[in-house]
Amino acid sequence: MGDGVVGEQRQLINVAYRLLGSLAEAEDAVQEAYARWYALPPSRRDEIASPGAWLTTVTGRICLDVLGSARARRERYVGAWLPDPLPGRAGRPHGTSGDPADQLVLDESVTMAFLVVLETMTPAERVAFVLHDVFRYPFAEVAGVLDRTPAACKQLAASARRRVRTGAPAPAGGQAETVRRVKEAWEAKDIAALVDLLDPAAVMTADGGGLAGAALRPVEGGPHIARYMAGIAEKAPGLELLERPVNGTPGLVARRAGTVLTVAAFDLAADGRVARIWVIRNPEKLRVWAGDGAPSPR
Image (cartoon, rainbow, N blue to C red; front, side, top):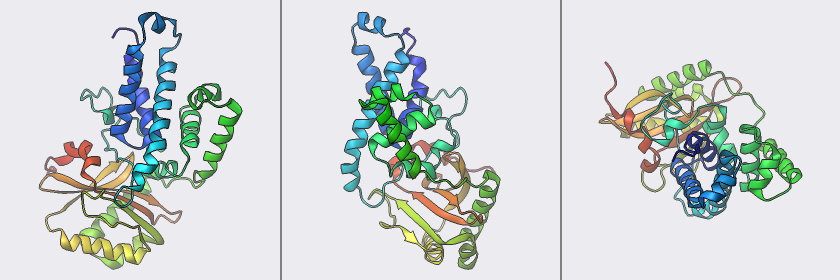
């Protein structure tokens, strides 16, 4: 494995996660790309001037195929489908666990709000936008992934760009303070305080995947969400709420007896109140959070 392609894995995992929103699917896509590389005759590999570009093209094409089939699979999914949440240790330097999450760089292109917008794009739009706008690949290379002309890829990226919100994200410091106040009000089952912290038009979306209890449809409106949250707190004695980064922004983690059961990501409105809450409860999407199961320091 001394042909120089192993070092590309980190970049490929970062590309694939943003394209797919799923750690498991991203890892599978990258492994498949490497399998195809090593299946080439040595003479063919020697002819490839840029193995990294070759691997990126192949990974992009695999992700495009996965995105095409994902639509049908997500129609059968129980309730809402949300991207996999990333813990704060993602992207830590010198990660040695081999976990793909440890190779992910946390920036604005992996916030839950951004990934949810990516989900609204067509597969071709998403590939063109992520490769060009996020990773700065030239349209000539994007064209090789999508099998379209560079001009067509430029149009796809422009269409995708229109779907991305123009509003600037709230400063992390402001979000941390708001999330802390949400945590305190939730723990106190203080519905009035929660209503004050929530935008009147706020929306909460939960992903249980049929494997954990979760609202099957989005809960809309600050008062409805506040009552829903207070009801959960009422029914879940012994639940511990922790402030933790989720996809690079301040969020909350709920655990019981050291096991993470829920991860919540937030997005704020311009006035600093909570506009969106994404709640991930599907245990298959929380495996990477197992390291947060140790008792918190007292």
